[in-house]
Image 1 (cartoon, helix red, strand yellow):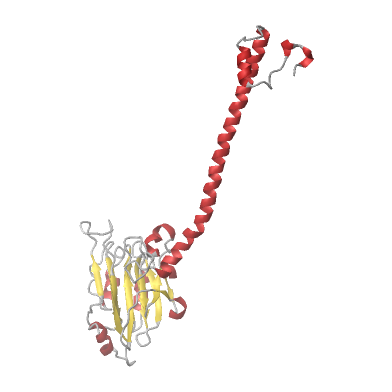
Image 2: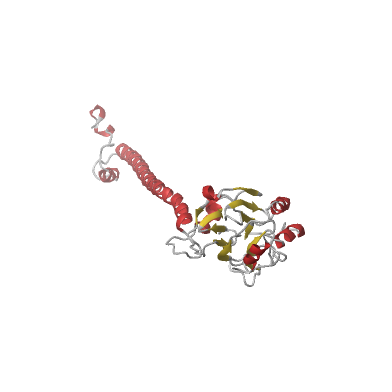
Length: 315
């Protein structure tokens, strides 16, 4: 519509853009002021169209962002649930599980415990699922030991097919991990994690000295067992029956079952040296797996060496 009835001062805001273009080219009016007005209005309309296109692009971007947030909200619970399913039903070396091990992702999803860390535990309260079945004759205890692989796969110790040490129980970590058993009942007495990389070796030494005579001792490494391991600590572990502890060094893999009061070495020990030319995990050697049967002590006496010799013989 024209303001004031004059054709020369009409506003062409409502005219289609293609018609404004034709008129501004002087197709029919032949008026210079009108052409100037049309050109000005065409510029304004072009600016308005540019703004609309920009808003449309912003709308599409906002839609994509909302879609990504919805997907993340759906996937987050699944990602949080997977580690628990892996720990409950997984075994990194087999055991008939359909799931991989939770420990394969522990470096990225689970923080390490501050060293040193050790405490007494009750097997009935702290035992978890192991899912590595080991059947033993009556009067013997089944055990399963898995050392850590690199600094990703955490260690495990299982007794009678129940996990008594592992990252899921918050009693395993970098260094040397220990479980002690009552040699007569098979009950867990203590578990300990001792950081022998940059922790205090005196805590490990005190733990070893406090082990009661006749106790069965299971030990396994994770990540780095050798840096802070001094002569006194090595000697105390050797007294439990270990032959490899004298040479356990930086990032070596080591697993061991012994007993307090044993007088000879025994076969429940495995040791893999850190060797860059042979390592399976870059800067770390292959993980260690040990399993077998430990004879219970049949009679409790001041000198239980006869029953401990059965352990040394691998009975």
